[in-house]
Image (cartoon, rainbow, N blue to C red; front, side, top):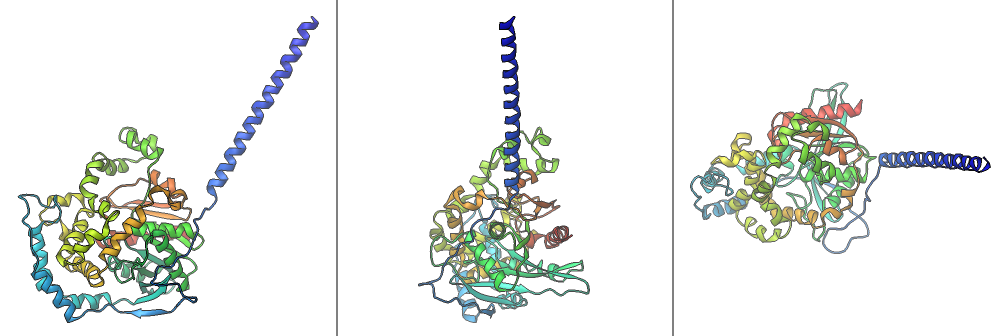
Amino acid sequence: METLQVLRDAFHELDAAWCRMVIGSAVAAVGILAYLLVRRRQVKTIPLGDGWWGEGEQPAQEDREIHPFEVKTSDEEIQDLHQRIDRMRYTKPLKDSKFHYGFNSNYLKQVASYWRHQFDWKKQVAMLNKYPHFKTNIEGLDVHFVHVRARPRPNQKVIPLMLVHGWPGCFFEFYKILPLLTEGTQSIVFEVVCPSIPGFGYSEAPHKQGFSSLDAARIFLKLMERLGFSQFYLQGGDFGSMVTTNMAQMKPECVKGLHLNMLNLSGGFKVLMSLLFGRYLPFLVGLTKEDVQRMFPFYDKCISVMLQEGGYLFIQATKPDTVGCGVNDSPLGLAAYILEKFSTATNLEYRDLEDGGLERKFSLDDLLTVIMIYWSSASIVSSMRFYKENLKSGGKRIDAKVGIYVPTGVAAFPNEVTHIPKSWAQIRFRDIRSYTFMTSGGHFAAMEEPQLLANDVYQFVQKVEK
C-alpha cells in the first residue's frame, strides 16, 4: 500500500509539473506572438542617406536657390530635326506582322510625315510653358519641376501633392490631370509639384554610377522641404511608384498618403499559392472574381509575354548605352522605340493593329511632344540607365525588406501590364485605405484616363483627411 501511495504522489507531482510546463509554454507563445504583432505594427523606415551626383567635388555650401525655367527651342533645332527625318532609312515590315515584331514601319512613315509637315514644336513649347517651370540644384544636379498652385474656391482646403512619372514618360504625362487637381470643385484642391527624375527630360543626369530610385526619392524629399512642405501626398506609377514608395519609407512622418496606379511587388508564399489555386479557389487565397478575371489571362502566358515584351527591360538593365547610341542619334528611331511602349503598355491587344492603336487613346501631338522632350534634352540614354541602376542589386535592396506603413490608395487599371490584387499588395503596404478596380485604362493612366485617375486621387485623400 505504501508503494502504491508513493507512485500516486509521484504521478500527481509529474502531472502538476506537466501542467505548469504547458501553461508556461502557452504564455510564452502568446507573449512571443504579441511581441511579433507589435513589432509588425511599428513604423519602420529606411535610412535617408545622402549623395553627390554632380561633376567634380561637392562644394562646402549648397546652392539652395530656386530659379525659373522655360522650355525653349530654335529654328536650328527644328531644321536639324527635319533633316534627320528626311534622311530616315525605313525597313520593310513582314506581311501581316502588325506590331508583333515591334513598331510597324508602314505606320512609322505616317508618323514621320505628320512630324515633318504638320507637328508644330514651337506651339507645343508654348503649351508646355503654360505652367510654371523651375530648377534647383540638389546633390549636384539641376532638378527640373513644374509647380502649379491651386485655385481654391471659398472653403476649399489646399493640399500639397507630388506627381512622379515613369519611363518612357515624363512630366508632360500629367498635363491633362493638372487642371482637374488644381481647379477642382470638391472640398479639397491640390497644389501640385511635378518633378522630372534626374536623367529624364530637363533634369540633369547623374554624372556617377549608382543613382537609383532611393536617391531620386531622397532628392525629391529635399525638394519638397525646400519648397516649404512638411507634409504632403504622393502619386506615381511605373518608376514613379518606386520613387514615391521609397519616399514614404524614408520619411513616413512627411507623407500623409501614397496613391499608386502601379505596384512593385516581389514573389512569396502567398503569391505562389494565389497563382496555384486562385483560379479554382479564389476565396481561400484572398482573391475576388475581378482579380481572377484580370490576373489569369496574363499569368497563364506570363513567360511568353515577358519574352515577347521584356526585351527592352533586359537591354536597359544591362547595356543601356549600346542601344542608346542609336536612338539618341535618330529621331524616328527614338520615336519607334518609345511609342512601341505606348502601344503595348496601353493595351497588349494593340499588337494586333497596323498602327498599334496609338491614336485610340492619344493624339499624335501629345505623343510627339513626349518624344521631343527626350529628343531636345538628349536624355534617352540617361533615362534608360535608371533600369540598370535599379535592377543590378536585385532583391538585396533595403527597401524590398521594409514595409510601407503610410495610408495607401491603389488604382488598379484593367490594362496595366500586370494586375496586383489587394491581398498581394497588403504584403508590403500595411495601411491600404482605398483599392479601386478602375473601369478602363492602362499603364499611362494620367494621359489615358485623367478624369478617372483624378477622381480616385480625390476619394483616397478625402478618406485619409477625415
